[in-house]
Image (cartoon, rainbow, N blue to C red; front, side, top):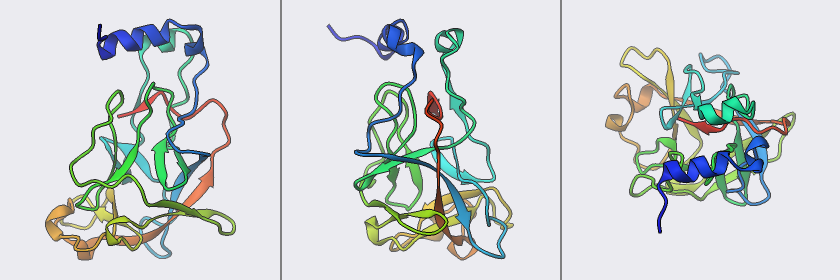
Length: 207
């Protein structure tokens, strides 16, 4: 007999383990970190990257959700920061929701993440190719799939003002794929990985 997602969630949160949120284990030997954009002289320099609406943004707040049943047990993680886990060549979000949430890069270059309780992602997306590179004072995250060369912050409108949606600078990135309609308006940046040491985990799930 198959159980619905709701039934599975209720079974999970009624178990003793639900009182102790666990970190995502989708990335093997994971390292947990937040992302800060580095591009001197730009509007995005030293700004944090946030998960919001199944995408990543600079200038939008982190969006998370924790079920009322978990909140009632005082077991919800903070849910205020966007924290990633990376290991080998995969990356995921630091969540407690069963099944985790995987990070991918769409064929358009847009950086996204899977919905909770689902492993589905857009056709043509790449889930491998993420690397943490040593550096001082911070490491940096890179993505090598789809011929990518770094990350871009693309303004949400034609005026060039923020917020900025995060893309991998993939080969053949088109104006029409960016929210403002212009690749030229996008700002290249280094994705600095700042260690996240809170053992509680970052969020129940990102939305």
